[in-house]
Image 1 (cartoon, rainbow, N blue to C red):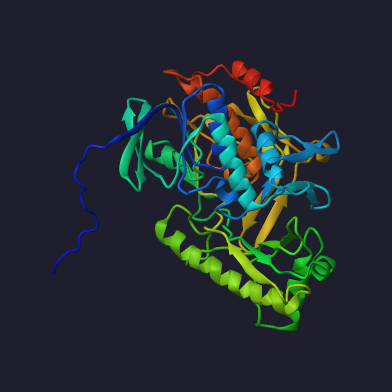
Image 2: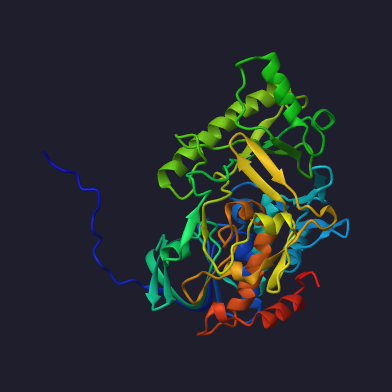
Length: 451
């Protein structure tokens, strides 16, 4: 009987060097955009590595279509609390007529800014180009090469083959902590019990009868009542993947965005976004759920009978995979208790949003008049590796803390701080950064540090 080999040995090879930089950022979502722009503006030769051919992260590739966590209540007034690079990005999106006015929800406890994804892509290109950032699209992080406690080079897979990129400092804004994992940084995945925040495949619906749909569903989605009625009136006909579905109009109310799916693995737990087999199966499952949900919309919801699906997001929307273990882990009580930190780098204004099995569980800060918390510098700094920072949803947080700070507002904050610090690292250690000096730079660049 022949035993099948389960591993193969790849021969050693020499890698061409793509280039030498001061700062290399991996991932072009909100954290990566803010990091790359900030590093370049502070004089660093900066490269941003992105797996797709466009920027925006889950906001474009995942079809999220809104910035969450930019606005929160301070002294009882809903106000924009996340400032800095994001202001320039919003202005550029608005220049393409692609930015909606703020939309309040949950009884006025949350506020989002929705946008057109194509306008976002164009605006992000212009923002990074104006800052002097070099971009390498269609490239995956594949490995790192070490020099003691430092990363000497990042290895990437490209259409030109496997290449190495050298830099003084690296920022992992991949969302999945890919670079940190390759570098041996300790991390956790999901909730630690084989599940996590459930993913969603987003889609957009066009050709809607806007007056009828708006009267029936409203600006901030009363779709769940229609779902409950359909289940009662047609037992067994519809099977919805979750409660708390969200259906909202875009700037043009003839087009709506749908956040209604929930992706499980074969065991019924949250799909693991860093497992290749589960990710592939999840893409199929997301589109299956979209097809079923769209039939419900056309049959049961006023205004949607003449509609058509105009876009399915390029990939399933991932909320949580790896989270590194850093010098501090942002946790549940930090969100609910509106924590303040001496080493603050900016603010998080989003509550805990736990996408659990079949439902969404919200938990808001106890101080409703001041419903935000500081984000500490230490959550970006890994316990190992001297010249690496991790920004965005894969930074150092607990499962519950991450459910809040993973929103785009917190990611912009983390990215701007990471890029600003990385620009002047040289041969130093991120654990030894002078936080007071960093804070002065962030304040000068328009970041709100709650002073």
